Image (cartoon, rainbow, N blue to C red; front, side, top):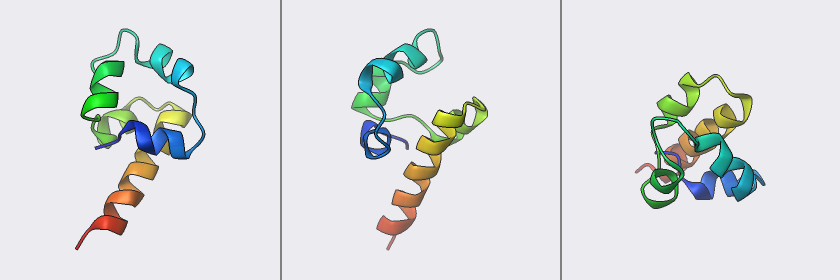
Length: 65
């Protein structure tokens, strides 16, 4: 799951991210409370969303047993 912490680590601002989520399947609130699937972000084909997905996947690999 991609979470706010992954976007923040890339230096993304909350205002821009909040706008990006407007009208999409997952909401800003979903993102900050539980996260959103990295695959969903990848499917958007948005360059910034792809970076967040990559960051989340990288963090998951680092934390895997």
